[in-house]
Amino acid sequence: MNILFITHDASRSGAPILLRNFMGWMKRNTNHEFQLLCRVGGSLESDFKSHADVKYFYPKHLNNPKTVLQRIINRIGYYKYRIKKHHRDLFLHYKKQDFDLIYSNTVVNTDVLVVLKKLDVPVLTHVRELESTIEHFGGKYLIRELDKYTDKFVADSYAVKKNLVDQHNVVDKKIDVIYEYVEVPEKLPDTEITSTLKSKLEIPEDAFIVGASGGGLWRKGYDLFIQAAVAICNKEGNENVYFLWVGGFKEDKEAEIRFDIHKAGLKDRILFVGSQKKPLDYFSLFDVFVLASREEPFGIVGMESALFETPIICFNNSGGMPEFITEECGIAVPYLNIPKLVEAILFFKHNPKLREQYGRNAKNKVLTQHTLEVKSKELLKIMENQLW
Image 1: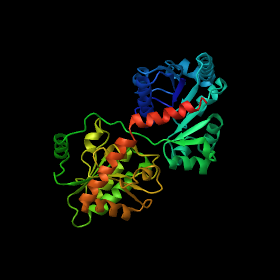
Image 2: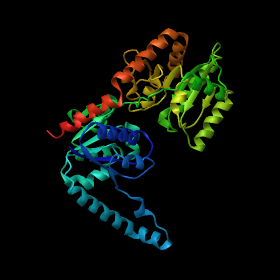
Image 3: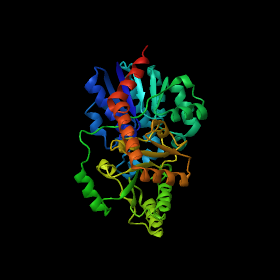
Image 4: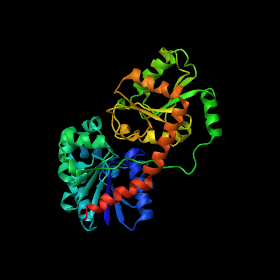
């Protein structure tokens, strides 16, 4: 099988990282050939180039005018002319490659698929987005156009599939579901690292630590996390409960978070530590993990926390994580119900044996059902099925 992979960018973020890992697995474990088309570039470019030949749909050099005259010429249409020519050349190049399948990594590659449609090659689109993200990139028009050029969708949860069917009228049988995976490191952080981090963050050794992670997007629910933290910290008997959020924010959002925490008088108990090069070191501190997202297609950070036998709490009707925490891996509380979120956190605090059991269940589920090896085999089977 000869495959053309398409990624919307090469940033060090969810979908590109998952694609990079899958391409690496294919290179190590199959004889299939493949190339990559990046819509735009990013910090993972060198990683991708170690796996395949890489080309760009919107190459930087075509929109990087160095003089005033070049900028003026671009504004009056020269850039559009050059891009059209580049896309025509790309199409002619790929026409010679005799691809068997095109795999598109997100919903935002429709403009690429339009250019490549005359290759007359089956297209598989992997959907890792729910409605707020889809709305941001074009809403119903985006999915309607994407549906025209896609032969098979792969959704990363049944919540994602349901959204495509209910909100965008995509045919149910056109969508398969493959849950996401985590990369399992050869070695997890040890107790020495855990102890050192607690000391650095000025968290007592016997503290009960409630963890969370995510970037500075509204849908990630960092404000909901703070509300639950304030409610618990203000309850008598919870003096040893600390809250720790791993993930970066823009300066203005960071200032708002600091303001709320300071006004609540809890700057020593509610800690936002920003992006970390080794986030799993911080995850090793957690006694319970809260996926506070209003909307999350699946929630890979939740599964990463589960590697440390940490149970997960999330909101119902928020995406794919409620599908993972079945079989006593965690608790799903009613959507945006902060009192119930508080109740769930305190349930695990006051029931250490159940917390340990739920944590073991979560870890076992990750290691047996959600590894790169397991999910890559599932995805490859669907890809191969498009040829028959």
